[in-house]
Length: 117
Image (cartoon, rainbow, N blue to C red):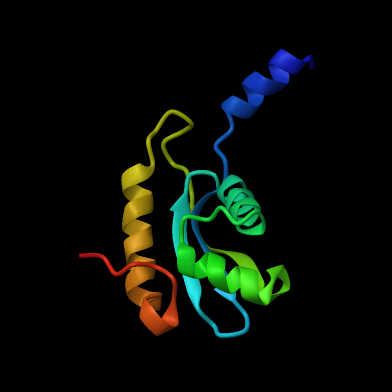
């Protein structure tokens, strides 16, 4: 396969999607999120944290103080694609994320997320 064919094949492949967490192994606090591309979002969050660019200031502060070794990036739940590559899974992901936010309550002393209003 040539480069263009490989790119086209990649675009037609549904990436692993679902819920991820960044867990502080020192104090147990969690940052929970959802993504249509779990590998991509985990890589992006790791890059942002290592470079002091993460949008969550409290998480960034703890990461800077503790260091990368004190954090674990984990997939919490996966969403299985049923509709194919062209289906928009945004609503399903938001519902799944809301369920996990309710279950884990990663707010205040327990986490880095902002409580929904």
